[in-house]
Length: 83
Image (cartoon, rainbow, N blue to C red; front, side, top):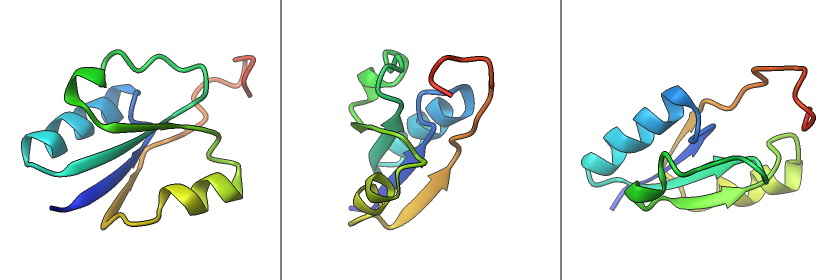
């Protein structure tokens, strides 16, 4: 079975990518910020990993054993406290 990493998976576009990949039978690893809501993708049963995409060690770990990366994570609001 193919395995894909979707960064920004809880966002609008990312959640739709997770939905489509799951429907295609792809095993999905989905990233989210530590305090980010993921209820919009939890019903799809991806492997949810929480961390900061600016953390090099985190990124090195999450890309292991995946066939494809869909990088959709982005700074979308600089006024948010996590940034």
